[in-house]
Length: 133
Image 1 (cartoon, rainbow, N blue to C red):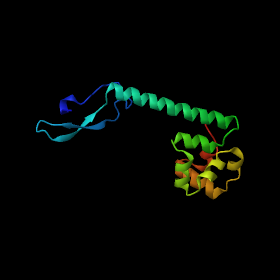
Image 2 (image 1 turned 120 degrees about the horizontal axis):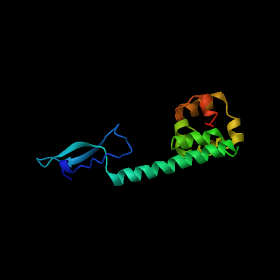
Image 3 (image 1 turned 180 degrees about the vertical axis):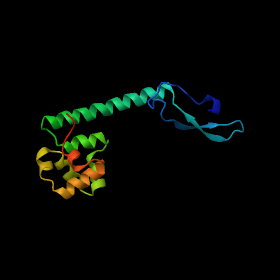
Image 4 (image 1 turned 90 degrees about the vertical axis):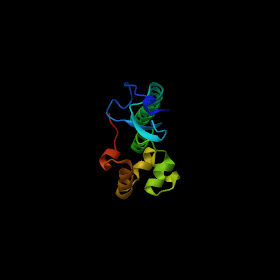
C-alpha cells in the first residue's frame, strides 16, 4: 500500500483521540510509518469484538450479583484474563484460582492473597471484593 492510500476513515473506535500506525511505501519505495485513524472494516470488527467483551463482563457481573460466582470472576473478565493467565500473574496453580472464582473459595482468602489478586487486576482490595451495582 502506498503512503497516500493509507485509510483515514473518520468514524472509528479511537474517536479521533488516538491513531494507529500503518506501514506504507513512500515515494522512494521504502516502508514508512504512517499514522491512521483506521478504516471502516477494521473499525466494525473492533466494535463487534468490544461488544462481545462487554457482554462477557456484564454476564460475569450478573453471576456475582446472583451469588453464583465471586467478585474475582468479574474482575478477571474485566481484565480479559482467564484462570490460567491470572494464575501466572499471582503465582498460583490455575485450579486454585478456579476455586477462588466460587463464592465459598473467595471467602476463604487471606489478606495477602487478596492483595496479590488486587495488584494483578489493578484494583484495590476493597474494589476486588465488590462489583458495580
